[in-house]
Image 1 (cartoon, rainbow, N blue to C red):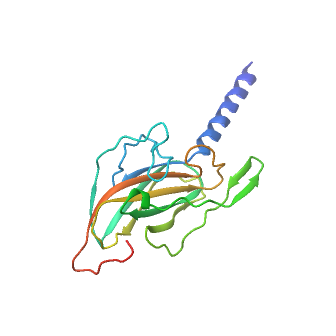
Image 2: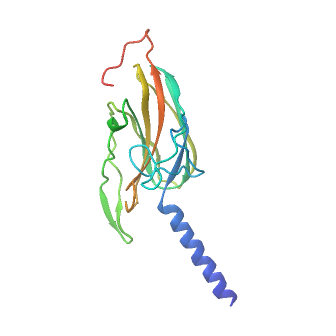
Image 3: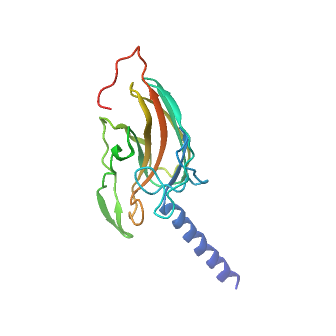
Length: 198
């Protein structure tokens, strides 16, 4: 009887581990997210800025003021591990944010899974950085970086953070990606040249 109970506990623990690692999650800590997030960062599946089909997210009304040409801190917290990387983009309108690229796929003993995503090593507007916080070491927890904001005037710009997941089947909403956005008001610095392309 004891062995059967231990076996059931072991199976339940294994199922829990698989369920936990099957979906990555992250919270956008800074700048402030445009929708309310729970402790895992949900809702965050649907492009371009999170939410789900059933829950588009409750708007926070948060707006971050930024000086053009200056550095802005980007801080996230990986709440559930999944291998992959992040991309940060900036656009004047939500529908100008870049689409999610399709990963190369590979066959595994668990069926087709995403391999690595193409990385843009020389990003152009609207992408600020790609390949950020690559993670293949079962890492969770906070990640931070500083990114230079373009020197432009942009009220109500959308700053998007996307997590791309490798080793993922891509089923369900959002496929291989998670999304968060923040609203930023950028004021150009008159002492600096205006950045083109934005």
